Each structure stands twice: as C-alpha cells, then as structure tokens.
Amino acid sequence: MKAKVSEWMDGELDGAEAERLALALREDGEDRQTWRMYHLIGDALRDTRALSAGFDEKMRERLAAEPTVLAPAEPAERAKRRLRGFLMPAAASAAAMALVGWLAFAPERGGPPAGMAPVATAPLAQPTVVSVASEPASVPLPLATEDYLLAHQNYASRSLSRGVAPYVRTVSGRSAEYKR
Amino acid sequence: MTDRDIDRELVARAQRGDKQAFAMLVEKYQRKLARLLSRLIRDPAEVEDVTQEAFIRAYRALPAFRGESAFYTWLYRIGVNTAKNHLVALGRRAPTSTDVESGQAEGFDEGEQLRDINTPDSVLLSKEIAATVNGAIEELPEELRSAIQLRELEGLSYEEIAKMMDCPIGTVRSRIFRAREAIAERLRPLLETGAGKRW
Image 1 (tube, one colour):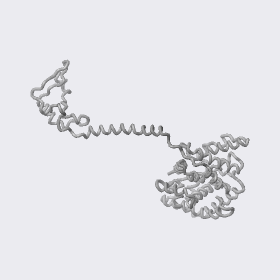
Image 2 (spheres, chains in turn cyan, blue):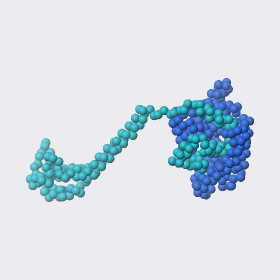
Image 3 (cartoon, rainbow over the protein chains, first blue to last red):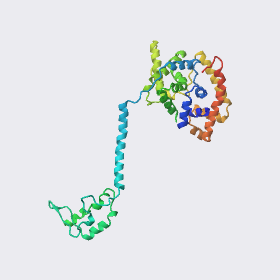
Image 4 (cartoon, rainbow over the protein chains, first blue to last red):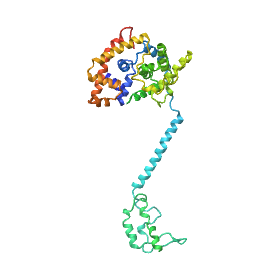
C-alpha cells in the first residue's frame, strides 16, 4: 500500500485504484502516516522549514471543532436548464436519425394505397390528358418508355422517394420536349 | 491523474462532508503555505496562527470553491487576505501586493530558501529533519537518489524520468518508492521520539 501512496501523490495512479486509496487514507492509520511522511520528505528536500511540533495537533483540533461543510446541491432550476440543454438537441438528433433511417430502410409497400389505382393496371394504351389552365398536369409517354420505366424503377434513386417511387410517374422532365 | 486532479478529488470529497479529505490537503500544503505567509508576517508564531486561520477560512469557504483555479492558488489568496487582515488588526501595515503576488502561489517552491518560520522549536526540528534527509539521500544508491530528486526537485513525471534515466517506468516507480522508504526509515525515529510525537 505504501508503494501506492507514493505513486498516487506523484499523480501516477488512476481510476479505481486511486479511488480506493483515497478512501483508505481517510483513516488515520499507517497509510495516512505514510502520506504525511512522504510530503514531509518532499518539503524537506525542497528546503521548506518544518512547523512547530504542536502545529498538527492544534490544526486537527481546530478543524474538528468546525461544523462539517457541505457544498449546496446544484439549484434545481439550473439543473433543469442543463438537462433541457442536453435533451433538446438529443431529441432533435434522434428524430433526424429516425427519419433518415425510415427513408433509407423502410420496406417498399406491396401495393398502392387505398383509393389509388396501380400503375401497372392503368389504361396505358389510351391515356387521358387533363389540362388545367392550359398547362398539362401530365404528359403521356410513348408506351415503350412507360414500360421501360416500370421495368427499371428498382434502379431509380432510393434516397428520398423510396416509399412512393412505384407510384411516381417520372415524366415531368420530358414535358418541355413534348411542348416543343 | 495529475497533482491538481488529486487536489480536485480531495476537495470534492471535502465538499461532500469528508473532513479527513480536507485534513489531507492541510497536511500536504501546511508548510508551503506557512513559508509563503512568512513573507508577509515576520513573527514565526504569528505565521503559524495565520496559517491555521487561513486553512479554517478555506474550509468554511469550501462550498463556494468551484475549481476554476487550482486549490493551492485559491488557498494562497485566502492566506494572503488572512495575513493582511491580521496585520491590519494589529495596526501594522500589510506589505504591498508587490511583495507577494498571487502569481507566485504555484511556482513558489524550489530555489527560495526561506528561513523565516524560525521558532526555536521549528528551527531545531527543521535542522534535524534536514540533516536526516540529507544524510539519507547521500547514502542512497545513485539511481535512487537521482530518481527521487528528479521527482521532488524537478517535478518530472515518471515517464520523463524514465526517458532521462533510460529505464522502464516501472523501474522509476520502484526507485522513487524505495528512496522515500529509505529516507522515511531514517526520519521515523526522529519524529516519534524526543518531546513526544512531533508531527
């Protein structure tokens, strides 16, 4: 144990061992004497004068006469603020992670939502063109292009539109060509 | 864990009501603080009284200590204020701040061989202790003597000493411990005899 005291006072002992030693030194026994002795040796080597013989005893008595101090616990409001400061960003991060996770890994739906006709069963041969304020809402593709897109939709980008990809008709980019 | 970490741990324990942890800090710093205060107060007996008073004030103020500075720096400021109040109470002029600056608090160690704390009792004890320690050091094998001096006088870490002495850290650890124990063996009879237990 003395070797550990030597090591600890040199700042070379960490973790549980240091914790155990600090507890052991609370008792005024041999290890505590070692602590006092080693510090005295260090001071003597540094040529620091010793104090008078009664100093330690008087100091002990005075300290013993003092009421035990206790540092006040952290005020509740400050503790709450600190907790909020931690929880809010943590909750935001968790929500963001959940969203990204859902977008990236959500299983593709087996069929279209209720009320929506599956693309595969839409009347492809005779598409209906609906115009609103002279701007076409959708532009029919040639049949071969639609078939091609449907067949290769699994290779389309999956980052953000995975869940709805089967039902998105990716034809708007072509509308300009059709307009010409 | 650095020396400051050790102090921080002891302070934290004391703040939780562990008086013994504070007593360990007293044992560690009493001579160093007294030596510093002897620059403000010339009377040796007063130096000891003020040193004790400073520790008591520090203990009472412990709940307010947040660890923003090193414990010893904080203790030193309390010591200086206590000394100045003491001098004012006695109608004496407190030395100006240029006499002792707080910046000296942590670096005030080696090289300043003060002899101000010189009650007859402490002079005799100090002389005996110094003679015993020096005698014990001289008798140590060279590798033990170098290790303890590099640690205590130069303040080097075990790793730095190991590099300087070209040996493993474990060897440094062992050498420093063996040196301390060899010196302690010589000191114990001195401290436990004479006018009762003297420390």
